[in-house]
Image (cartoon, rainbow, N blue to C red; front, side):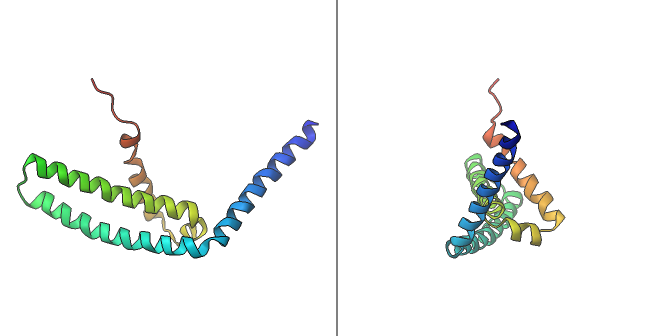
Length: 124
């Protein structure tokens, strides 16, 4: 009985992987425009991030403006993280084929910066 259990489990995992690839292929006409929308949003967020960074470092700000800028930085970070996760989940093969090692390092570093948001520091 246990002799046949492992191959069934592996066949089940292979079936799930095939269904996932089939679903992505089936809905590619929906996923590709979403991916392009994320690319445009990431470009706009990059421009906003650079301008916010210049304003943050270049001018004197009071505490409320700094808090507002930090909120914008968090939203921009969320756009980046959503784009990375979307490409990793729905465009895995293209992401693997077109991504260089430096982008992998930057993407992993960006996702690691989200850990304090998931696991906040306890109050002392």
